[in-house]
Image (cartoon, rainbow, N blue to C red):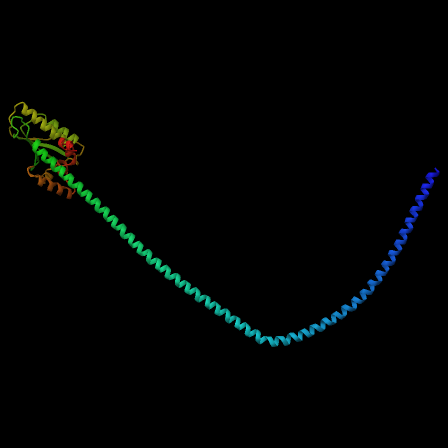
Amino acid sequence: MESLRLICERDAKIQLQKVDSFMASFCNSLDSIKAIVEGTMQNQGKSGRLQSSLREADDEFVKVLAGFSLSLSLFLLPIFINTRKEAKQMATRESISATRARIQELQKSVLVQRARRDEYATIMSQLSLALFLLAFLTALATSEEIEHQDIDHRRDIQEAMLWYNRVLGFKIEGGQGVKFTLNNINLKNQDEECSFTIRHENDTYTLLGCDPQLNDTKQLIHELNKTNGLFKFVRNMREKFQESASLGFLPQTTTLHQESATVSVSAPALSISSDTSESLTKTSKAPDEHIRNSKGGRGRGRGRGSRAIMSPVSVRQSPRFKAKK
């Protein structure tokens, strides 16, 4: 206990010393603060005096500056006005110079554009001329090709007609109807001729005459009106004549007027009317007349009779023409 008491006393003394030192430092601080406050009060008084003197100096400076500004403005006003005028004049001159330069550039650009336009116009005219020449040459080549094809076609038709005339003895004559004359029928007499005459009117074929007279012609006419197969009808008539010649029937001229029934199917493609048949040649011994008539038929829009007698179909049906191809 005694030691504890001693320790407490020692600690109490230490704390008392600390309190004394703190109080002493606090007093010193108060003294220094008082001194600072007094200095501050003195400085505030000096600052007030300086501010009042500064205000006075400022007022004097404003007065002096106002007088100086007035005199300076009176002196510099003419100079400023002249300078401003000169600046405006210089700006105007620069603007005029820039405008002139711009005008010159635009004129140069216009000249360049005109030159390009003229060049493009020349190129376009040359191109148009080239296209026209190309189209003309193409049309010329096409017309020449068509003309060559037409010449070859007419030559083939002429050869086919000559072959029909020479080998089959086939002749066509115009008149009231269309007369087909055939030879090379009778093997014993090649020059013996057989003929028949048909007429096409109102989309109906009619057998007007047959030399020599044959049987079953009504059936053939009926089939012709039904199918409109004129070339098949001619071949059938040749076969009938050949059968009649093989049986030994002598030719005898007969005149028939067999009216066949009208078929509802029209026959414009292979029809031969009596009016059109008059434009046919009188004999196949003159092939040049056939060619001229065929040309005339094409120029008039290719009439029915001409197309029926000398159409390319008949040429393609020729055995000799097939062999040639």
